Structures are given as C-alpha cells and as structure tokens.
Length: 140
Image (cartoon, rainbow, N blue to C red; front, side):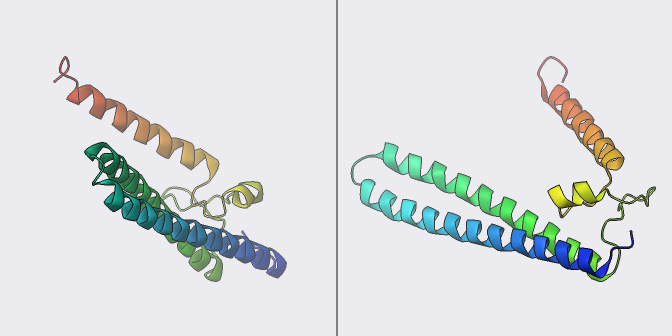
C-alpha cells in the first residue's frame, strides 16, 4: 500500500495516540493495584476475606498490565512497518494483500487482512475446542 505522506503522518499520529492512552491506562492500573495492596495490608488485621479480595484484584490488575504490554508491542511493530513502508500489507506468509484503510483506522495495529484474520481465528478456535475436548474426562 503506497500511503501518501499525509496518510503516513495521520497513521503515525493515531498509533502514537493509542500508545499514549495505553501507557496512561497502565500507569493507572499500577497506581490502583498499589492502593489496593496498601488497603489490603491495613484490612488484613480485620480478616482473611478482605486480603483474599485484594489478592484477587491484584491478579486482575497484573493481567490487564500484561494486556497493555502486548498492545504496546503491537503498536511499536506497526510504527516500524510504517517506517519501512510495509504498513498496511498483510503479514500472513501466503498473502500480501493490502489491509483496507478503514480496518487500519479502527485497528491501527492490524497485521492481517480480514480474510487472513478470519483464518487465524478459525484455526485458534479449532485448536481451543480440541484442547477442551481432550481435557474433558469423557473424551480423555
């Protein structure tokens, strides 16, 4: 996809804006988790239920933080592709179709065209379904 200089600037601005939002969100999660831990220490004298709730909440915060890291990596890779003039081209091995601009506007870190994304999701769903079945006592 041959992006014009203006389109490249627009996508770079969009990607950097998303990156800034994610960093702010991640910072908020860390602050929130720390506050919950501090409250948990105070409440631990009251009973174990409060402490268990704080630990559970902290695990959710860690999961959200991991999600933020993955999204940041996707954005950084998209910025590299933008610099290399490969942004907007499907990364699937057997495909080099252009990713529609509308898709890139909605998902600026998109790496796959719609058809390849559907194939990937179908393969992941099939894999997950077979793993669930193989771990089920009836099918094991």
